[in-house]
Length: 285
Image 1: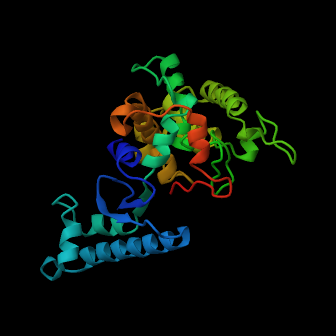
Image 2 (image 1 turned 90 degrees about the horizontal axis):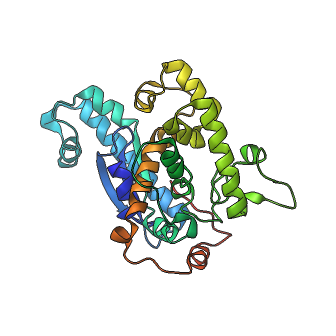
């Protein structure tokens, strides 16, 4: 969760962290990409990811006495007991995550972002937190559009959205904050009735109800920790495995937003809308 707290509060959209996918505490580099186009940013980030994959392969294949200074620096990020197998595994798990402090700060000023849930574990409290998933999904940006075509504050795909909203050539209710929020509450209630666990219900918002039910059957548990460690199903990758931790970090940051971001401005809807262009979809990865 500490990783996502940093993503929300320390790093903005001009910074990209190169890290280990399975253990984000292992951070190879923080890149600054201000002034670059999105295509340039993706290219330089991709090159650095390849650099670290190659470095990790060298750690696995070369004797220690032949390690370069860069290889020694990267090796020092891992436990001293790490051997060739761990480095080879890590070589295929080099991941990048862009900071979203600026987006989260704008989202913290939005009306839906106010009055974050109190601590506790009752279903009502967890549901209260669950309906703040837009911190994770879109940072309360009503113009957000994902690469997969998910749209609006709640990032409904067309398929899921049509179960609760009008989406056609004339109207797309995913863009209506209030209508979409009501639809999201319906989704969460129905998902919880099927899944029976709020942590997995929240995760289903990323991985789908059917996907979570399949994971439960495969591993035989409602324990999200075990699912993350043991389930290796299709599409259950970094985003799905980290969604609940990302959500928890978002709720914790929201509880104390002014400590992280300073006094929040009023007239928040105007602030959020002004922060984004409808022709420039949000890129969060």
